[in-house]
Image (cartoon, rainbow, N blue to C red; front, side, top):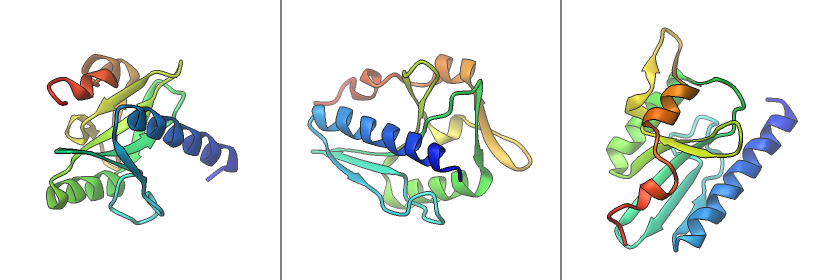
Length: 132
């Protein structure tokens, strides 16, 4: 991994953590996520709301994730029962939240285009509709 890419991803994770904390969530950044760990990058808890976020800050027209990573996220979500999202900080700085089931499977990866993410992905505020 290129060092600058790591820094950009880390900054995006901290940005999302701050937004969640401002909404009253207790937030945990999972150490070692993405390196063989099934756990998403960020876990957020508030009363009965529980969410996991695999963060991506990719300035491109599509997002691709390794097949093994998405399959581990599916397994983690099934065992934990915690709603999990791919949190994509899209070009321009807006966040889109995509459920792993909405990714399209290819031979070696899972992907979603920017247009699809903008159409079906939730905005940050949409995650809290109906919750306290």
